[in-house]
Length: 506
Image (cartoon, rainbow, N blue to C red):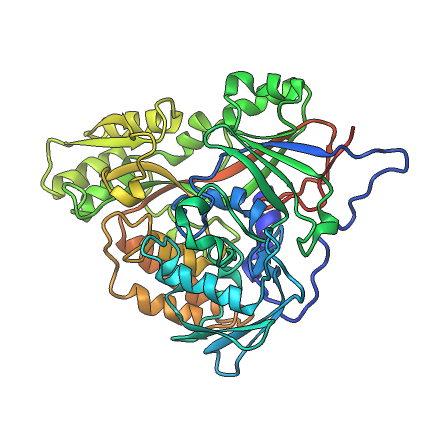
Protein backbone atom coordinates (compact mmCIF):
# COMPACT_ATOMS: atom_id res chain seq x y z
CA UNK A 1 0.00 0.00 0.00
CA UNK A 2 1.47 3.38 -0.98
CA UNK A 3 1.81 6.32 1.38
CA UNK A 4 -1.36 8.06 0.22
CA UNK A 5 -3.47 4.95 0.59
CA UNK A 6 -2.00 4.19 3.99
CA UNK A 7 -2.75 7.68 5.24
CA UNK A 8 -6.13 8.23 3.68
CA UNK A 9 -7.75 4.80 3.54
CA UNK A 10 -9.23 5.28 6.96
CA UNK A 11 -10.74 8.56 5.84
CA UNK A 12 -12.80 6.62 3.31
CA UNK A 13 -14.76 5.14 6.17
CA UNK A 14 -15.06 8.43 8.10
CA UNK A 15 -16.65 6.78 11.09
CA UNK A 16 -18.16 9.17 13.59
CA UNK A 17 -17.98 7.93 17.14
CA UNK A 18 -19.86 10.63 18.92
CA UNK A 19 -20.13 8.73 22.17
CA UNK A 20 -16.67 7.21 22.13
CA UNK A 21 -13.93 8.57 24.33
CA UNK A 22 -11.01 10.28 22.60
CA UNK A 23 -7.56 8.75 22.91
CA UNK A 24 -4.89 11.31 23.73
CA UNK A 25 -3.23 12.63 20.58
CA UNK A 26 0.20 12.13 22.05
CA UNK A 27 -0.24 8.48 23.03
CA UNK A 28 3.06 6.69 22.74
CA UNK A 29 5.16 9.88 22.83
CA UNK A 30 7.57 9.62 25.72
CA UNK A 31 10.68 11.42 26.86
CA UNK A 32 13.66 9.28 27.78
CA UNK A 33 14.59 9.18 31.43
CA UNK A 34 17.68 11.30 30.85
CA UNK A 35 16.07 13.63 28.32
CA UNK A 36 15.10 17.21 28.98
CA UNK A 37 12.42 19.12 27.10
CA UNK A 38 13.02 22.56 25.69
CA UNK A 39 10.36 25.19 26.29
CA UNK A 40 10.12 26.76 22.81
CA UNK A 41 9.15 25.52 19.35
CA UNK A 42 9.43 27.70 16.23
CA UNK A 43 7.33 26.69 13.21
CA UNK A 44 7.92 27.93 9.69
CA UNK A 45 4.43 28.18 8.18
CA UNK A 46 2.24 30.86 6.65
CA UNK A 47 0.80 33.52 8.92
CA UNK A 48 -3.00 33.75 8.70
CA UNK A 49 -4.71 36.34 6.53
CA UNK A 50 -6.72 37.18 9.67
CA UNK A 51 -7.02 35.69 13.16
CA UNK A 52 -10.81 35.66 12.81
CA UNK A 53 -12.02 32.26 11.53
CA UNK A 54 -15.37 33.72 10.49
CA UNK A 55 -13.87 36.19 7.99
CA UNK A 56 -10.82 34.18 6.92
CA UNK A 57 -10.99 33.58 3.16
CA UNK A 58 -7.88 31.41 2.92
CA UNK A 59 -8.28 27.68 3.48
CA UNK A 60 -4.67 27.35 4.58
CA UNK A 61 -5.35 29.70 7.53
CA UNK A 62 -6.93 26.85 9.48
CA UNK A 63 -3.54 25.47 10.52
CA UNK A 64 -2.47 28.70 12.23
CA UNK A 65 -5.96 29.39 13.59
CA UNK A 66 -5.97 25.97 15.25
CA UNK A 67 -3.13 27.17 17.48
CA UNK A 68 -5.46 29.66 19.20
CA UNK A 69 -8.95 28.24 18.60
CA UNK A 70 -10.50 24.88 19.34
CA UNK A 71 -13.39 23.46 17.40
CA UNK A 72 -16.50 21.86 18.83
CA UNK A 73 -14.94 18.71 17.39
CA UNK A 74 -11.48 17.89 16.06
CA UNK A 75 -10.24 15.69 13.23
CA UNK A 76 -7.60 13.16 14.17
CA UNK A 77 -4.49 12.36 12.12
CA UNK A 78 -6.58 10.20 9.78
CA UNK A 79 -9.22 12.87 9.21
CA UNK A 80 -11.96 11.34 11.37
CA UNK A 81 -14.19 13.44 13.62
CA UNK A 82 -13.30 13.10 17.31
CA UNK A 83 -14.23 15.10 20.43
CA UNK A 84 -12.91 18.62 20.91
CA UNK A 85 -14.72 21.20 23.05
CA UNK A 86 -17.58 18.70 23.01
CA UNK A 87 -16.79 15.37 24.63
CA UNK A 88 -19.64 13.67 22.76
CA UNK A 89 -22.67 14.29 20.55
CA UNK A 90 -25.90 12.59 19.54
CA UNK A 91 -28.34 12.98 16.66
CA UNK A 92 -32.08 13.01 17.10
CA UNK A 93 -33.85 9.92 15.80
CA UNK A 94 -35.00 11.76 12.66
CA UNK A 95 -31.52 13.19 11.96
CA UNK A 96 -32.88 16.76 11.95
CA UNK A 97 -30.92 17.95 14.99
CA UNK A 98 -27.67 17.11 16.75
CA UNK A 99 -26.80 17.91 20.37
CA UNK A 100 -23.19 18.47 21.43
CA UNK A 101 -22.26 17.87 25.06
CA UNK A 102 -19.54 20.34 26.05
CA UNK A 103 -16.81 19.58 28.52
CA UNK A 104 -17.59 21.24 31.86
CA UNK A 105 -15.54 24.20 33.09
CA UNK A 106 -14.28 25.42 29.70
CA UNK A 107 -12.96 28.99 29.46
CA UNK A 108 -11.64 31.27 26.75
CA UNK A 109 -8.06 32.47 26.84
CA UNK A 110 -9.18 35.73 28.47
CA UNK A 111 -10.71 33.79 31.37
CA UNK A 112 -14.36 34.23 30.37
CA UNK A 113 -16.73 31.27 30.40
CA UNK A 114 -17.07 29.05 27.32
CA UNK A 115 -20.48 27.48 27.71
CA UNK A 116 -23.38 26.54 25.46
CA UNK A 117 -24.48 30.19 25.23
CA UNK A 118 -21.02 31.18 23.95
CA UNK A 119 -21.06 28.38 21.38
CA UNK A 120 -24.52 29.48 20.25
CA UNK A 121 -23.35 33.09 19.84
CA UNK A 122 -20.23 32.09 17.93
CA UNK A 123 -22.11 29.86 15.49
CA UNK A 124 -24.82 32.46 14.96
CA UNK A 125 -22.15 35.02 14.12
CA UNK A 126 -20.73 32.57 11.59
CA UNK A 127 -24.17 32.31 9.99
CA UNK A 128 -25.13 35.97 9.96
CA UNK A 129 -22.01 38.16 9.90
CA UNK A 130 -22.02 40.30 6.76
CA UNK A 131 -18.49 39.30 5.77
CA UNK A 132 -18.66 35.69 6.95
CA UNK A 133 -16.90 33.19 4.69
CA UNK A 134 -18.28 30.19 6.60
CA UNK A 135 -22.00 31.04 6.33
CA UNK A 136 -22.52 28.77 3.28
CA UNK A 137 -21.19 25.82 5.27
CA UNK A 138 -23.77 26.50 8.00
CA UNK A 139 -26.66 26.69 5.54
CA UNK A 140 -28.36 23.56 6.88
CA UNK A 141 -28.29 24.94 10.44
CA UNK A 142 -31.70 26.57 10.93
CA UNK A 143 -31.16 27.60 14.55
CA UNK A 144 -28.98 26.93 17.59
CA UNK A 145 -30.25 26.51 21.14
CA UNK A 146 -28.38 26.43 24.43
CA UNK A 147 -30.28 23.72 26.29
CA UNK A 148 -28.14 23.90 29.42
CA UNK A 149 -24.74 25.22 30.40
CA UNK A 150 -23.06 22.35 28.57
CA UNK A 151 -25.60 21.18 25.96
CA UNK A 152 -26.00 22.98 22.64
CA UNK A 153 -28.28 21.75 19.86
CA UNK A 154 -28.09 22.54 16.17
CA UNK A 155 -31.54 22.34 14.58
CA UNK A 156 -31.25 21.52 10.89
CA UNK A 157 -33.27 22.33 7.78
CA UNK A 158 -32.61 18.80 6.56
CA UNK A 159 -30.94 15.61 7.70
CA UNK A 160 -27.20 16.34 7.73
CA UNK A 161 -24.78 13.82 9.22
CA UNK A 162 -21.75 15.87 8.11
CA UNK A 163 -22.06 18.33 11.00
CA UNK A 164 -19.45 16.76 13.36
CA UNK A 165 -16.88 16.84 10.54
CA UNK A 166 -17.89 20.35 9.56
CA UNK A 167 -17.37 21.70 13.08
CA UNK A 168 -13.81 20.41 13.36
CA UNK A 169 -12.37 23.19 11.20
CA UNK A 170 -12.78 26.97 10.93
CA UNK A 171 -16.57 26.62 10.83
CA UNK A 172 -16.65 25.13 14.31
CA UNK A 173 -13.84 27.12 15.94
CA UNK A 174 -15.45 29.00 18.81
CA UNK A 175 -14.68 32.70 19.20
CA UNK A 176 -15.25 34.65 22.40
CA UNK A 177 -18.57 36.54 22.01
CA UNK A 178 -17.07 39.50 23.88
CA UNK A 179 -14.03 39.66 21.60
CA UNK A 180 -16.12 39.29 18.43
CA UNK A 181 -17.90 42.56 19.17
CA UNK A 182 -14.82 44.33 17.79
CA UNK A 183 -14.10 42.50 14.53
CA UNK A 184 -11.23 44.82 13.63
CA UNK A 185 -9.42 44.06 16.87
CA UNK A 186 -10.20 40.35 16.60
CA UNK A 187 -8.37 40.18 13.26
CA UNK A 188 -5.05 40.64 15.09
CA UNK A 189 -5.94 39.76 18.70
CA UNK A 190 -7.77 36.40 18.78
CA UNK A 191 -9.59 35.13 21.86
CA UNK A 192 -10.30 31.42 21.64
CA UNK A 193 -9.88 28.24 23.66
CA UNK A 194 -7.10 26.54 21.71
CA UNK A 195 -3.79 25.11 22.89
CA UNK A 196 -1.98 28.46 22.76
CA UNK A 197 -2.61 32.15 23.47
CA UNK A 198 -1.33 34.82 21.09
CA UNK A 199 0.87 37.25 23.00
CA UNK A 200 2.36 39.37 20.24
CA UNK A 201 1.86 39.64 16.52
CA UNK A 202 3.70 41.48 13.78
CA UNK A 203 1.78 40.98 10.50
CA UNK A 204 3.98 39.45 7.83
CA UNK A 205 6.75 38.80 10.32
CA UNK A 206 5.99 36.72 13.41
CA UNK A 207 3.42 35.54 15.92
CA UNK A 208 4.51 34.70 19.46
CA UNK A 209 2.29 32.43 21.53
CA UNK A 210 2.34 30.78 24.96
CA UNK A 211 0.73 27.59 26.20
CA UNK A 212 -2.89 27.95 27.26
CA UNK A 213 -3.14 26.25 30.68
CA UNK A 214 -6.95 26.22 30.38
CA UNK A 215 -6.95 24.24 27.12
CA UNK A 216 -8.97 21.08 27.73
CA UNK A 217 -6.09 18.87 26.56
CA UNK A 218 -3.26 20.98 28.00
CA UNK A 219 -1.44 17.90 29.33
CA UNK A 220 -0.61 17.02 25.73
CA UNK A 221 0.92 20.44 24.94
CA UNK A 222 4.57 19.88 25.79
CA UNK A 223 6.08 23.26 24.86
CA UNK A 224 5.51 26.48 26.78
CA UNK A 225 6.33 28.95 24.01
CA UNK A 226 5.38 28.70 20.34
CA UNK A 227 6.67 30.99 17.59
CA UNK A 228 5.05 31.12 14.14
CA UNK A 229 7.10 32.59 11.32
CA UNK A 230 6.54 32.67 7.55
CA UNK A 231 7.90 29.65 5.70
CA UNK A 232 11.61 30.18 4.98
CA UNK A 233 12.72 31.14 1.49
CA UNK A 234 14.31 28.18 -0.37
CA UNK A 235 17.70 29.88 -0.25
CA UNK A 236 17.72 30.05 3.55
CA UNK A 237 15.76 26.95 4.60
CA UNK A 238 18.85 24.94 5.56
CA UNK A 239 20.53 27.90 7.24
CA UNK A 240 17.35 28.59 9.23
CA UNK A 241 17.26 25.04 10.56
CA UNK A 242 21.01 25.00 11.25
CA UNK A 243 20.92 28.28 13.16
CA UNK A 244 17.85 27.31 15.18
CA UNK A 245 15.75 30.05 13.61
CA UNK A 246 13.25 27.26 12.82
CA UNK A 247 12.64 24.00 14.66
CA UNK A 248 9.97 22.84 12.20
CA UNK A 249 9.57 24.23 8.69
CA UNK A 250 7.13 23.64 5.87
CA UNK A 251 8.98 23.07 2.60
CA UNK A 252 8.26 23.06 -1.11
CA UNK A 253 9.16 20.07 -3.28
CA UNK A 254 12.18 21.97 -4.62
CA UNK A 255 13.67 22.33 -1.13
CA UNK A 256 13.45 18.70 -0.03
CA UNK A 257 16.65 17.44 -1.64
CA UNK A 258 18.84 20.20 -0.23
CA UNK A 259 17.39 19.94 3.27
CA UNK A 260 17.82 16.16 3.34
CA UNK A 261 21.38 16.50 2.01
CA UNK A 262 22.13 18.82 4.93
CA UNK A 263 21.16 16.01 7.31
CA UNK A 264 17.75 17.22 8.50
CA UNK A 265 14.79 14.83 8.78
CA UNK A 266 11.94 15.57 6.36
CA UNK A 267 8.47 14.18 7.04
CA UNK A 268 6.62 13.51 3.77
CA UNK A 269 2.84 13.31 4.07
CA UNK A 270 0.33 12.90 1.27
CA UNK A 271 -2.46 15.26 2.29
CA UNK A 272 -5.94 16.09 1.03
CA UNK A 273 -5.32 19.40 -0.86
CA UNK A 274 -4.95 19.48 -4.66
CA UNK A 275 -3.60 22.03 -7.16
CA UNK A 276 -6.33 23.44 -9.39
CA UNK A 277 -7.09 26.07 -11.99
CA UNK A 278 -9.97 28.32 -10.87
CA UNK A 279 -12.10 29.31 -13.85
CA UNK A 280 -14.88 31.89 -14.05
CA UNK A 281 -17.36 30.42 -16.53
CA UNK A 282 -19.30 33.68 -16.83
CA UNK A 283 -16.33 35.36 -18.55
CA UNK A 284 -15.40 34.79 -22.21
CA UNK A 285 -13.93 32.54 -23.54
CA UNK A 286 -14.42 30.34 -20.47
CA UNK A 287 -18.22 30.51 -20.79
CA UNK A 288 -17.94 27.83 -23.48
CA UNK A 289 -17.52 24.39 -21.81
CA UNK A 290 -15.52 23.13 -24.78
CA UNK A 291 -12.88 25.80 -24.17
CA UNK A 292 -12.49 24.59 -20.58
CA UNK A 293 -12.34 20.97 -21.80
CA UNK A 294 -9.66 22.00 -24.28
CA UNK A 295 -7.63 23.55 -21.46
CA UNK A 296 -7.94 20.40 -19.36
CA UNK A 297 -7.06 18.17 -22.33
CA UNK A 298 -4.02 20.29 -23.23
CA UNK A 299 -2.50 19.83 -19.78
CA UNK A 300 -0.09 16.95 -19.22
CA UNK A 301 -0.63 16.34 -15.52
CA UNK A 302 2.00 13.64 -15.26
CA UNK A 303 4.57 16.07 -16.64
CA UNK A 304 3.50 18.65 -14.04
CA UNK A 305 4.12 16.11 -11.30
CA UNK A 306 7.44 14.95 -12.72
CA UNK A 307 8.94 18.21 -13.90
CA UNK A 308 7.37 21.03 -11.90
CA UNK A 309 6.73 19.15 -8.66
CA UNK A 310 9.84 16.94 -8.52
CA UNK A 311 7.87 13.71 -8.86
CA UNK A 312 5.65 14.24 -5.82
CA UNK A 313 1.87 13.89 -6.09
CA UNK A 314 -0.57 12.10 -8.38
CA UNK A 315 -2.53 13.46 -11.38
CA UNK A 316 -6.21 14.16 -10.58
CA UNK A 317 -9.30 15.32 -12.45
CA UNK A 318 -11.36 15.91 -9.30
CA UNK A 319 -10.91 17.55 -5.89
CA UNK A 320 -10.49 14.32 -3.92
CA UNK A 321 -7.51 11.91 -3.95
CA UNK A 322 -7.76 8.19 -4.46
CA UNK A 323 -8.75 6.37 -1.28
CA UNK A 324 -10.92 9.23 -0.03
CA UNK A 325 -14.62 8.51 0.40
CA UNK A 326 -15.74 11.18 -2.10
CA UNK A 327 -13.28 10.15 -4.84
CA UNK A 328 -15.16 8.94 -7.90
CA UNK A 329 -13.09 6.43 -9.90
CA UNK A 330 -15.15 7.17 -13.02
CA UNK A 331 -13.47 10.58 -13.20
CA UNK A 332 -9.91 9.24 -13.29
CA UNK A 333 -8.24 10.34 -16.52
CA UNK A 334 -11.39 12.26 -17.43
CA UNK A 335 -9.59 14.40 -20.01
CA UNK A 336 -6.43 12.53 -21.12
CA UNK A 337 -3.57 14.68 -22.38
CA UNK A 338 -4.05 15.06 -26.15
CA UNK A 339 -2.86 18.20 -27.94
CA UNK A 340 -4.69 17.35 -31.18
CA UNK A 341 -7.94 16.77 -29.26
CA UNK A 342 -7.50 20.08 -27.44
CA UNK A 343 -7.16 21.91 -30.77
CA UNK A 344 -10.23 20.10 -32.08
CA UNK A 345 -12.26 21.18 -29.04
CA UNK A 346 -11.16 24.78 -29.59
CA UNK A 347 -12.30 24.59 -33.21
CA UNK A 348 -15.64 23.15 -32.15
CA UNK A 349 -15.96 26.06 -29.72
CA UNK A 350 -15.53 28.50 -32.61
CA UNK A 351 -11.80 29.17 -32.17
CA UNK A 352 -10.03 27.34 -35.03
CA UNK A 353 -7.10 29.74 -34.78
CA UNK A 354 -6.73 29.37 -31.03
CA UNK A 355 -7.40 31.80 -28.20
CA UNK A 356 -5.51 34.23 -25.98
CA UNK A 357 -5.86 33.89 -22.21
CA UNK A 358 -4.19 35.30 -19.13
CA UNK A 359 -3.28 32.97 -16.27
CA UNK A 360 -2.90 34.58 -12.85
CA UNK A 361 -0.30 33.17 -10.46
CA UNK A 362 0.15 33.66 -6.74
CA UNK A 363 3.88 34.19 -7.20
CA UNK A 364 6.06 34.94 -10.19
CA UNK A 365 8.38 31.93 -9.95
CA UNK A 366 5.78 29.16 -9.71
CA UNK A 367 7.22 26.36 -11.91
CA UNK A 368 3.78 24.78 -12.27
CA UNK A 369 2.42 27.94 -13.88
CA UNK A 370 5.36 28.19 -16.29
CA UNK A 371 4.94 24.59 -17.44
CA UNK A 372 1.16 24.98 -17.83
CA UNK A 373 1.85 28.02 -20.00
CA UNK A 374 4.08 25.93 -22.28
CA UNK A 375 1.53 23.11 -22.50
CA UNK A 376 -1.37 25.43 -23.29
CA UNK A 377 0.64 27.34 -25.88
CA UNK A 378 1.35 24.06 -27.67
CA UNK A 379 -2.40 23.53 -28.11
CA UNK A 380 -3.12 27.01 -29.45
CA UNK A 381 -4.20 28.41 -26.10
CA UNK A 382 -1.81 31.34 -26.12
CA UNK A 383 -1.17 32.06 -22.46
CA UNK A 384 0.40 35.04 -20.76
CA UNK A 385 1.24 34.92 -17.08
CA UNK A 386 0.45 37.64 -14.58
CA UNK A 387 1.06 37.81 -10.85
CA UNK A 388 -1.94 38.58 -8.65
CA UNK A 389 -1.83 41.87 -6.78
CA UNK A 390 -0.37 41.18 -3.32
CA UNK A 391 -2.93 41.51 -0.55
CA UNK A 392 -5.90 41.53 -2.95
CA UNK A 393 -7.97 38.38 -2.42
CA UNK A 394 -9.30 37.04 -5.70
CA UNK A 395 -11.92 34.96 -3.86
CA UNK A 396 -13.49 38.27 -2.87
CA UNK A 397 -12.76 40.54 -5.86
CA UNK A 398 -13.11 37.86 -8.60
CA UNK A 399 -10.76 40.07 -10.61
CA UNK A 400 -8.93 37.23 -12.32
CA UNK A 401 -11.10 34.70 -14.21
CA UNK A 402 -8.29 32.15 -14.74
CA UNK A 403 -6.08 31.43 -11.74
CA UNK A 404 -3.56 28.79 -10.67
CA UNK A 405 -4.64 27.91 -7.16
CA UNK A 406 -4.63 25.22 -4.49
CA UNK A 407 -7.74 23.78 -2.93
CA UNK A 408 -6.84 23.18 0.68
CA UNK A 409 -9.62 20.67 1.31
CA UNK A 410 -12.22 20.86 4.05
CA UNK A 411 -12.96 18.57 6.93
CA UNK A 412 -16.26 17.44 5.36
CA UNK A 413 -16.49 16.34 1.69
CA UNK A 414 -19.89 18.04 1.48
CA UNK A 415 -18.31 21.24 2.75
CA UNK A 416 -15.59 20.84 0.11
CA UNK A 417 -18.22 20.60 -2.62
CA UNK A 418 -19.89 23.75 -1.31
CA UNK A 419 -16.62 25.72 -1.23
CA UNK A 420 -15.76 24.67 -4.77
CA UNK A 421 -19.12 24.53 -6.46
CA UNK A 422 -21.78 26.16 -4.26
CA UNK A 423 -23.26 29.45 -5.53
CA UNK A 424 -21.45 31.34 -2.77
CA UNK A 425 -18.39 29.08 -2.70
CA UNK A 426 -15.07 30.91 -2.40
CA UNK A 427 -13.58 29.01 -5.34
CA UNK A 428 -16.69 29.22 -7.52
CA UNK A 429 -15.64 32.40 -9.32
CA UNK A 430 -18.72 32.47 -11.57
CA UNK A 431 -21.18 31.70 -8.76
CA UNK A 432 -23.01 29.21 -10.97
CA UNK A 433 -24.11 25.79 -9.76
CA UNK A 434 -25.46 22.76 -11.67
CA UNK A 435 -29.18 22.31 -11.05
CA UNK A 436 -28.74 18.71 -9.94
CA UNK A 437 -25.92 19.35 -7.47
CA UNK A 438 -27.83 20.71 -4.43
CA UNK A 439 -30.15 17.70 -4.48
CA UNK A 440 -27.22 15.29 -4.80
CA UNK A 441 -25.36 16.98 -1.93
CA UNK A 442 -28.48 16.91 0.26
CA UNK A 443 -28.92 13.21 -0.50
CA UNK A 444 -25.32 12.45 0.53
CA UNK A 445 -25.69 14.52 3.71
CA UNK A 446 -28.75 12.49 4.63
CA UNK A 447 -26.76 9.30 5.11
CA UNK A 448 -25.08 8.45 8.36
CA UNK A 449 -21.38 8.17 7.55
CA UNK A 450 -21.48 4.51 8.58
CA UNK A 451 -24.28 3.78 6.12
CA UNK A 452 -23.07 1.54 3.25
CA UNK A 453 -25.00 3.76 0.82
CA UNK A 454 -23.08 6.90 1.79
CA UNK A 455 -19.95 6.46 -0.39
CA UNK A 456 -21.95 6.00 -3.59
CA UNK A 457 -24.08 9.05 -2.78
CA UNK A 458 -21.18 11.40 -2.13
CA UNK A 459 -19.31 10.08 -5.18
CA UNK A 460 -22.36 10.78 -7.34
CA UNK A 461 -22.35 14.39 -6.11
CA UNK A 462 -18.66 14.64 -6.99
CA UNK A 463 -19.34 13.42 -10.54
CA UNK A 464 -22.18 15.90 -11.09
CA UNK A 465 -20.01 18.77 -9.88
CA UNK A 466 -16.84 17.90 -11.78
CA UNK A 467 -18.55 17.17 -15.11
CA UNK A 468 -20.60 20.37 -15.03
CA UNK A 469 -18.26 22.92 -13.47
CA UNK A 470 -15.18 24.61 -15.01
CA UNK A 471 -12.54 23.97 -12.32
CA UNK A 472 -9.51 22.15 -13.78
CA UNK A 473 -7.90 19.88 -11.18
CA UNK A 474 -4.23 19.04 -11.64
CA UNK A 475 -2.45 16.92 -9.02
CA UNK A 476 -2.44 16.04 -5.35
CA UNK A 477 -0.38 17.94 -2.81
CA UNK A 478 2.37 16.52 -0.62
CA UNK A 479 3.27 18.19 2.66
CA UNK A 480 6.98 18.35 3.42
CA UNK A 481 7.90 19.12 7.01
CA UNK A 482 11.56 19.48 7.90
CA UNK A 483 12.69 19.57 11.50
CA UNK A 484 15.80 19.55 13.57
CA UNK A 485 16.76 16.26 15.26
CA UNK A 486 15.69 17.82 18.55
CA UNK A 487 12.00 17.77 17.58
CA UNK A 488 10.06 14.67 18.57
CA UNK A 489 6.46 13.48 18.33
CA UNK A 490 5.41 15.01 14.99
CA UNK A 491 2.54 13.09 13.40
CA UNK A 492 1.49 12.74 9.78
CA UNK A 493 -1.81 14.63 9.62
CA UNK A 494 -3.77 14.30 6.38
CA UNK A 495 -5.61 17.52 7.18
CA UNK A 496 -5.10 20.07 9.98
CA UNK A 497 -1.60 20.17 11.46
CA UNK A 498 -1.64 19.91 15.25
CA UNK A 499 1.09 19.87 17.90
CA UNK A 500 -0.24 17.74 20.72
CA UNK A 501 2.51 15.39 21.86
CA UNK A 502 5.31 17.36 20.16
CA UNK A 503 8.36 18.27 22.22
CA UNK A 504 11.80 19.76 21.67
CA UNK A 505 14.92 18.44 23.38
CA UNK A 506 17.39 20.92 24.80
